[in-house]
Length: 377
Image (cartoon, rainbow, N blue to C red; front, side):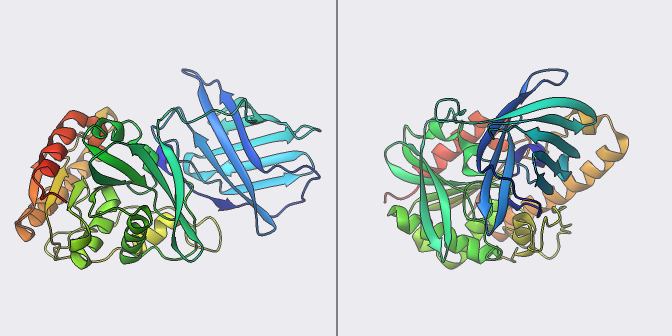
């Protein structure tokens, strides 16, 4: 699943002439490319004398909280322009006199007409998932979005991977509410959580999770994290194992979660900053730490070997690079298993990185069995 379909970000809009109209709010429109229609949501808000905004393609991602950061946005008179570098797209349009419509063209290879209308209470598209949303304070001027899918029993807290929000679990989490009370936490810098310029080290993000647990008044929850969330799990498991009942790594046991110097660990690509402050994803990757001692019950599910997908499988150069990465991933899974002998390690062949989506039934089975074997709270 491409990051361009999954990543959210808030941005400072480029300085420009401020119009009489207030463009803050939610805008939505439908694109008609060759193939299925695509719905877009543009959120615009005032920020320190300028603007901040984010763009969501809600039909291209299962994560309603993930968007794409515009690299530039100008509003001069009625002329609206913005660009999304990560998908090489740009938009030029005009704001109507009553400030209710932006009419223009989105260019991504082909020019396509896109009219964005200001959403109202009656017309706004709503997230179809069944959950409540609240915000909890975890640090000075930092609030995190918390989803609550309901349920009864032991608390289970889901943490998303890099670029995603807790909404990535909207279809998966409800399948666990029959046995557990399931929550999701969106880390700082992403989704509707606060996006400060600092505080992205692994241990600080781990402290954010603990602060959210305290605010929710949860007693020894199970933590389940996807991808980069493995670092939050390991931060807590190495420093505060008594505060959680168990840790579940969903294709998340890589170098940021468990460090073995014998395993070659190339840094994954990170997005460039969009202003003078680091992009949150860059801050997260720069803040990784080397965890070698993680205590408490652990379940680690690795998608190994990963499914390369047809685009990679049909490209010899990409397939060769993919196999190199798979060799590293295999070595890492073995290092995790050897270095943490109390961990139960499961390998699911031909799954993709979003293993809880590609292999939902397998992951549910392993999670339920693992949690069922934990000591009663």
